[in-house]
Length: 328
Image: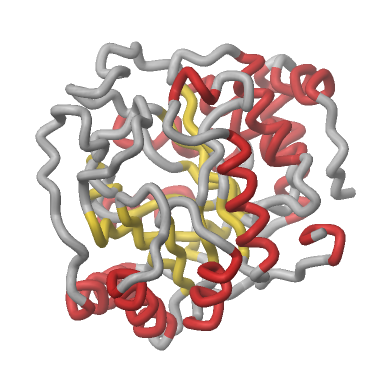
């Protein structure tokens, strides 16, 4: 049963269950709603790096922080096609293209992104973009070009949001999610743990996502990777068990959503990742870099898949059906 009326109290009770009970319930729900041995492999490509005007406390691409990230203009179409080709050959079914923009603007750069989307879509790969805030009209242009998914993370709870980002509001985030849905794109939206947030903030983030009129098709859960030069550079690493709790809780309250084990896998052993898969994670980013932070290589992940008996999910397994209630 898919519910969109979870209360924070219900989600908190699930999150705080004894670990083994929590994992068992999440694994059971996962097996009843998904092919538990299938994992979606996505590859993340930075198509425009650095120089962002936002002040996200965790991000090395913010122009106001001295993080050593070189500003790079929008890359060329042939670079995108070559990256997509390599990712597909390595087993990825989705290419996610990220640009360090505050928002999408109707200019030549956006026209070039539309051409990138068309080209990757023609390769029979799912195409995802994360370009910042966008209007419905821009979302519709991306849809018409062949975009499959749009990523726009809520990051944390509504109550904690302003302590992490001040240059835009939580409502700005939700408006973009609405525009994505209105354009009938699949939605990718999750957040980060380890920002210094409370358990209530983690619950609040899951509350927001699970109470959308339609659950996101993909929910990435990220470990904070502290980057020197950002306000969170000295943030302490959190336990992998906190990641397990987040994944398991997300799986229980959003049974059919793809839950992505995202940033932070470099800090996790194969055994720890295996527990995350058991608890309901069924997607990863593969490739040696996530925009600007390190990530396990494709070859390492393929060896892990073989060891654990996992297989890569094919592209376009699930599309999007948007109800009138979702876009009202």
